[in-house]
Amino acid sequence: MNYEIPKEFKPFVSYVKRICKANKIELMLAPSRTVVITDSFSTDCSGYFDGDDMVLAVACGKPFNKWIEILIHEFSHLQQWLDDERWEHWTYCCGELWAWLDKEKIMNNSQLKVIIDGMIDLERDCEVRALNNIVKWKLPINKSEYKRKANLYLYSYRMMPILRKFPSGIYDNKSLVSMCPPRMLKKYDKVPEAVQEMIMKLYS
Image (cartoon, rainbow, N blue to C red; front, side, top):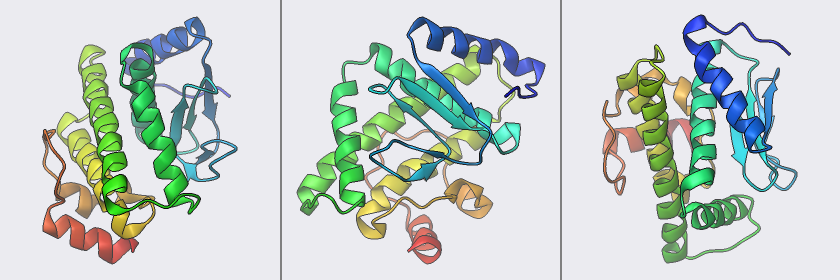
């Protein structure tokens, strides 16, 4: 399926396609609003990168300005896979977290904290890479707004022991996004009280 891509974004999208082809990664730009992560995890999401199955998938059945940010994020995961030695640990944390969310694995609070710390480490690094890609390719994306969304995403991982699920659609809540800082933080040990209360109210 062909998508109407604004000219400002075409060099970046072409680069993503070249890197995927060079590394034998299947680039799946699906015409649906969601994609299924893997056969093992039936959870629907907006996109994912799987280094084992060699797939980068993005749900493109939504406005361009929404799915392009997902592509940037997932491509940044591909870059981690290519050059970061922490990838194996991160992949382990991801598998353990989803197994816990699917109630296939039991973990105590200390074990769960180690896994969530690993996931926040993974995703923060990914978001920093995504922002670097936005700057490098001069993409017309509001960087402060992107950082707010990224912070909300990272906060959501810290909320998982309480919610026992990922709060789907959280980025569409403009009020929640606006409550998050417009800069990347070094640590995400504590969710701001107002953000935590609203997430609990809306997604618990």
